[in-house]
Length: 70
Image (cartoon, rainbow, N blue to C red; front, side):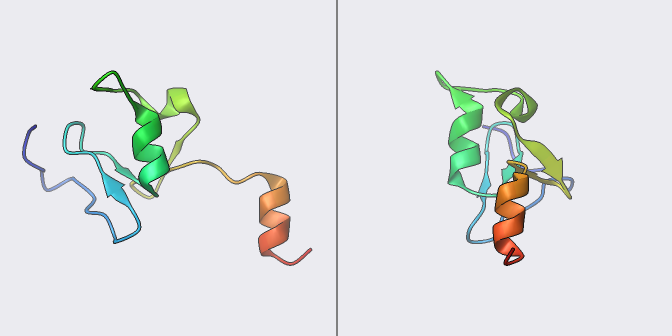
């Protein structure tokens, strides 16, 4: 485990920061998805995208419509 650098995005209470690769995820699910057998995987390979320094699963059109009340 290496120390965080000034470039690290510190998580809010609902987010998760990986102490190994120093990526911040929108939630614990993203953190869990990027770890396999004790190693970090590139979040892109598990369907996540970087949104302002936080790795998140992109929302589907259906999910966006539901949030907008359509």
